[in-house]
Length: 369
Figure 1 (cartoon, rainbow, N blue to C red):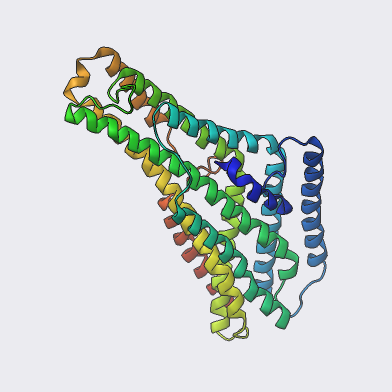
Figure 2: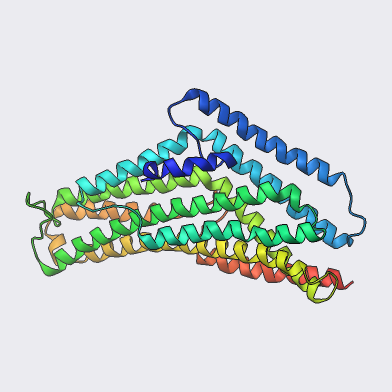
């Protein structure tokens, strides 16, 4: 499915986020040089900006600005470098999604199709929102002093667009996990009804041993797809979350400073234009990750319910295969993981909110000294 999107997604190569071409070795080499240029450009911007101290700024505000600026530069370097290193793996990931979709259609008789229009609308709205919310910050920077904004503008665009792309990939993974879970639910329902359900005119039975084996193999491919995604984008997810967390937390602090009349009220436009999209992106990505994790739990639940059915005990080969399948699902969870540091789910969202409150209290205490 990603192959069908690539004619549109390839323009994100201008930000170093996706490969431009799969077959042309020359274009691959040129893009790697371009990605290296983006990293060097951000490093040069950082060096130039840091060498011009802002003596008019409060020390705490200046320190916070520098920390966030450094986090953005490092995050962009991680994102672009990871795509450079995994240039060929990106198309391998696309091919794996295509093969899994074909296998679901041919062996499990699942119509994969395209994403729902609600998913397209959601991702498109997030992408447009991430771009539009940069405008208030540009307005404030043109009409006043917004520290390090122009130097980090490219970094902001790269980070936000990378997050939108990762939401698209996770949505695709979640759709495949959901379709797989629904087919497994059909198997459970057929056993509960005692029916000899058929999928097509060839009388391929939902309750057959061969069909259970096909389900087991497809689940393993689905797990490998999740693992490949985590390997491909794990460091990008981690770096992006660090930036979104620090950026949104710091902008809440600056909002408090504006309300305390330390800064002019026009800076509220800039703080809200950073805090809102950052928080929304964190929320949506955690919800997408939670959806995938719940699908994994539901798949395990269907299999355990199936193992308790009376008819299963009479078929030794079916029971043995089902036991292996249950162990496989329990050991190979379908989760979005950032290099082992965290899983993207609701618990991560709660941890982020708790950490925000803690750091805001610390910043406010320092600002009152």
